[in-house]
Image 1 (tube, one colour):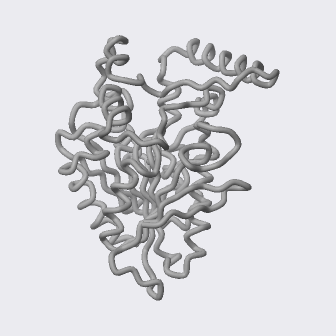
Image 2: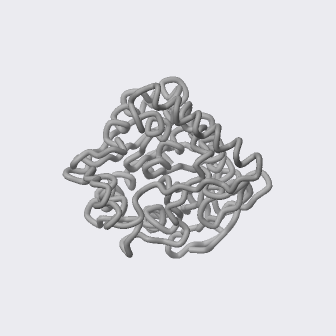
Length: 307
């Protein structure tokens, strides 16, 4: 593995390039862009999948989203769908400059929110020849479902507008957290949803904690998510081979199980498959060895057949 950067507009996007064993620059390899979940970074679950897919003979590029992790960008901790999707196109731009990458054999893999972004990017980034998702989630749906009432959504957007006004007039940038900052805080809130409980266990303990994933979110940036739909036009534009992996265990608030089936039913891909890992929760597929191995076995066959 080696650290690299590539450009998105004027700033550097930080990435790790995972190389196959016995790597030879004189050869041509298939390549896979690997995208981390929302609130995550390239050293967490994205690194696990990138390393395992590199072991199978692929060059894998795991990157930090712009404004997050070690990447630059216009601000910090933004969750802006347009910028997130553009990161994928810029990753493809970088890969096609590498002499050892076969430009006709580039795939993409996204995990959780990164899966939704990967799907959205692939619809217009035709250099991606095969698309994979691990517990892929639609960030726009998550924004809209924070409260099911339209009035609550409008109230939230009005609050975001007020915050932007304050910041335009010199107020400090509002930074929130994605999840409770500890198990004690989680318990004090009385939250029992499996996805949130396991998110706290993953992100705030040695299990998955990383400096590049500080549980920080720019509040004003969230407005763009309300009109974003990661799967918009998938029935027309998502034609590449598609492999979806979801967990068949207890479903939680992040909704990746139902998003997986919605995507499967909607995609125009003639070659598509949805693989359910029995009894696995959303976060089991981040790092639980037996669950990850099942996912990788499916991805191994998928990318071998389609790249």
